[in-house]
Image 1 (spheres, rainbow, N blue to C red):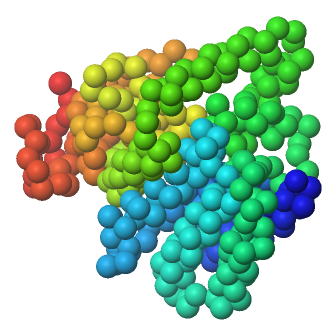
Image 2 (image 1 turned 135 degrees about the vertical axis):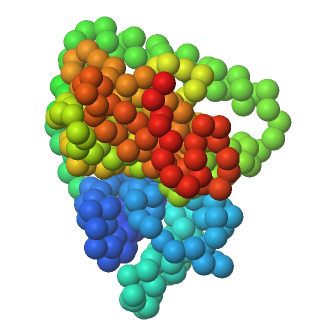
Length: 365
């Protein structure tokens, strides 16, 4: 087992360098962030998350070999690494092969995107890793879990990498960087008596439910996961290609200096805000100053409800909910009453009631 762990550490270090080198080619914040995350990664799922973020935040031209259908298959392999790791049904060997194949496919698209031919030394390094996986250490690495922690990076005093593998799997914490507030909460949970028992009890219940579902299913768990990942990949591609663009413009009247825009499902009045979604390039929520724009990429259906608030401890609505759709452009303009008018520009070819395909439709009610 020690030999397998040593081999896994070497393979992980090599993959970290390969992802870092590839991400460094992208001249944007997405490339720099991915390169940094690759250096800090301690597991294959953490590397996979960094590569997925790089794909999501980088616009790549569609080609015959990079159409939506082939992108979905490629992305589903990455998602399978993450799902298989969470379900503890994927070995380090299988996850390593999936990641190597994903890196090779992505490199064939990324290098031309930055105006370069695929680097021969980079390709040889990836081939060496794949040889180590398939030929040299195949049998040993099949007994290691996909989320095996390795590499030479030292962990912070309060880090998700210090949590047991069971905790990291259940809460999808692999490679997650904690904010100062989260670090404080985790430190309290580790020190205060009783909190660990409550959390462990919840995890035990979740494990029992998972085993019950698996026992009632006769199909291959990996095949079931891949089918689920393929559906998630199609949703992720739709979110990437059709963001909702929101711009806050100066109007004739003086409005609030900042507004908070939030999108939510039609069926719910409570916005679903995933972890880490706040910020200029957030998923479902963003805070805008006058003259600023953002892109929102919500999950769920194609038609979404957008609301505008005055950012404060108690969110004060300054615009009632208005329906928007994926790919729409929304202009926010303050009016004389201190409220904010929404103008939704029709960008898609489909027809929506109350919206003009060739201009702006007043989204206020």
